[in-house]
Length: 372
Image (cartoon, rainbow, N blue to C red; front, side):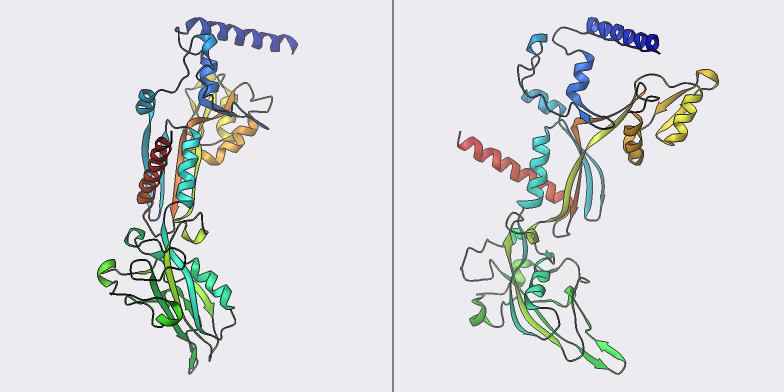
């Protein structure tokens, strides 16, 4: 056992020496390139997780690690994978994790939308408390282009330029064996293009109708089937809901996404050839991810696209720590390749959200440059 271990270490050292001798001046050795570009997922611990951004990190090897705008332009790529309704997945390649996380945070908290901010209760005899009903109303996505409204500042008067008004007037009654309006849903909110019907109480005064401002579609809720309350015959809810612009950093109801998240591009590597019956065994343990090429004793295992078999990756990670497979398998993740997923609430399409997030990020950079 000891001699076998020694021979493996000797073989690895010979390969490392050969790789070092093959390197061109100004280029990192292969093992350092892997450490720089990939995070290694061990069975209990991840390795090489940090990003080496220091310009002098590899100066002892004669390698300039400083940031290059030309290299950034050359390597940056965005690849759309799919768009399904309000969901979208795409790849961003060649960026730092800080930029990916900045885009994620902007998507969640800094893109303006319109949401219900003030609820004026006229009557509520249902079992649900007024404050609970108001909170539920605030979280209902409102389908209005936020660019059509101005921000409402503090105690500023609500006008047609900064406020959208909905009315809910529902009474539950019995007609024979049927109960009408037992369930109050978001689709029962009615848009009032001419503003509040009780301007003195709400301090909301429109000088003109919003019909021309918002276009033929007007203002409505993204989903008409969201349950707001349940009532029994004789109960009623009458209220006005006033919507204004805001951002998710102030309250989650203004966030345009259900979630926005990313993960790193995975890669399964066969370090040492897996041949013969061992290749058959590996293909059976992780079907689809590993296949067998060739026939006879020289047949070998080949790794497929890790992204297409993500359910198998946790198994590969555990196997990489087992004695039988530790010399053969490794799970890596590319540090500058982000698989980004945006799940919109439906207020804005996910592709528009991404473009707006880029605009916000560019504006932040411009603001920083102004103060340098």
